[in-house]
Amino acid sequence: MPQPLDFQYPERVRLAQTPTPLQKMERLSDRFGVDIYFKRDDYTGTELSGNKIRKLEFLLHRALQMGVDTVITCGGAQSNHCRATAFAAKRLGLKTVLLLRTPDPEKPPATEANILLDYLADATIIWITPEQYQQRYQYFAWQAEQLVAAGACPYIIPEGGSNALGAWGYVATVEELVNDVNLLGGSGAESTTVISAVGSGGTTAGLVLGNKLLSADFRIVGVNVCNDQDYFQKVIGDIVDDFQKNYLSQPVVSSADIEILDGYVGRGYALSQPQELEAIRDLARLEGVVLDPVYTGKAYYAMISELEKNPECFGSRIVFLHTGGLFGLFSITEQMAELL
Ligand SMILES: Cc1ncc(COP(=O)(O)O)c(C=O)c1O
Image 1: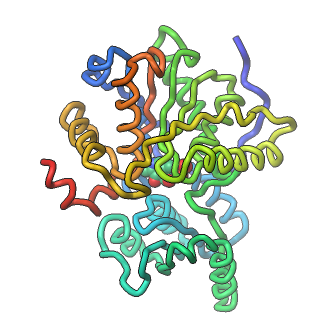
Image 2: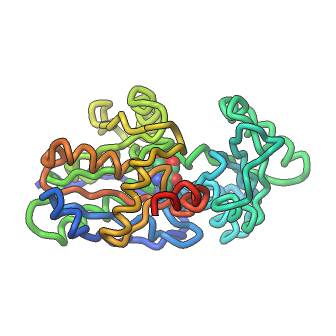
């Protein structure tokens, strides 16, 4: 049996409720004749719910080590990452500045769902246009300068917490998944496909790296919810390369290990099609599990669409990674209510 490679985790601050449970979706499994499990990373916390807190454990440890008093990060208007950062920062006594993307900063979106929570956690929100967001690293630098001039000490966390340090959060998750699958008995990781949503790439990068470092042999499939396959091959490849340069003595992952299931962006980032929302509704009624419209709903819709075409396409066992994001549902209540 292949042994895990030699590696050492950087230090982290414990914020997430982990390990998260692995739950079998009985009726969904019957429907497709495949064993389908959900890894409940939506259970990592209430305010902190979802995948981001796993990355933030490592990133915020670094911030604390550096003695900062403020974290700056960025995302879409309803960013789950920004909400989780704002609350995690509060747990550690830090302030948060968020650069949030919106078409017209003069008319910011309603204070609802994740935005409401950002304000509740006393985050300072700076609204920027999609064009300005393209230059977000300049905005980060500019914002950091302003904070320093005002006597603060800021730490910049990239979009989605997706960099080499943050990716450790999902290396650790592979360790949980290996234990989860061992407890199931029967066939192991080699016959298990792990499916998750891809937004900024850090989760998939961590899963792919963890898979190799732990010699786990899962098939890791990422469903992009924006951009396309080529874009994410590059983005995830860059995070992986940085990780390997910074933390490993030799590379373990190549670009062939990064599998992106493209074709399910639909109307675009954070825009839903009726069939995606119907899939969310139907799963809630079938299994009592709620997905979000921006990430997990799209990834789930992709998974069942592929299974409908070919029930064997992911092998005999699937682990769908529920990465959270539920608050996002409360920003599309009218659209969803029409389907109820
Ligand atoms: C709920 C949820 N799921 C999945 C993702 C995708 O994770 P990543 O950004 O690491 O690709 C995100 C963020 O982008 C998210 O908020």
